[in-house]
Image: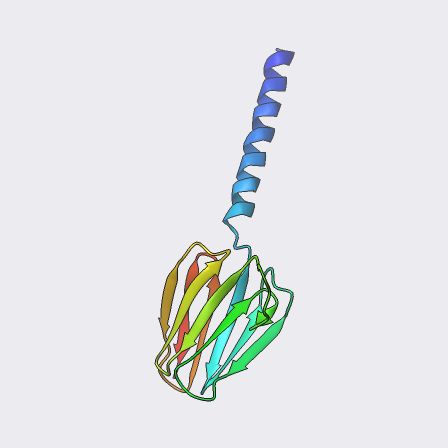
Length: 129
C-alpha cells in the first residue's frame, strides 16, 4: 500500500513538473510592443531585451532598419533575437534573422497611428485610426 502511495505522489509530481515546463516553454522568450506615429516607430521591450524603449524615425519612406535585443541598428555581431523592419507608410514588414519562429511577417498600418505586438511566434495587434 505504501509503495502505491509513493508511486502516486511521484507520478503527480512528474505530471505537474511537465505541465509547468510546457507552460514556461509556451511563453514568448521575447515580446515587444510597437507604435507607429507618422514616420516614427517606437518599441517597448516586454520580454528579453536589454532596452526598455527604443525608436527609429524614417527620413523617407520606405525605410529599413535592424532591431535586436540591444536596440535599433546596434551592430551586434550575433544577437540572440534580431529582425529587419521595413516601413512603407501602409505596411510594416518584418524579416526574422535570429531567435524567431517566423521568416517573414507583415502588418497593415494605414492611418496616423498604429499599435501591435511582436514575439518569436508572430505579430498581433490593432490599428488605431
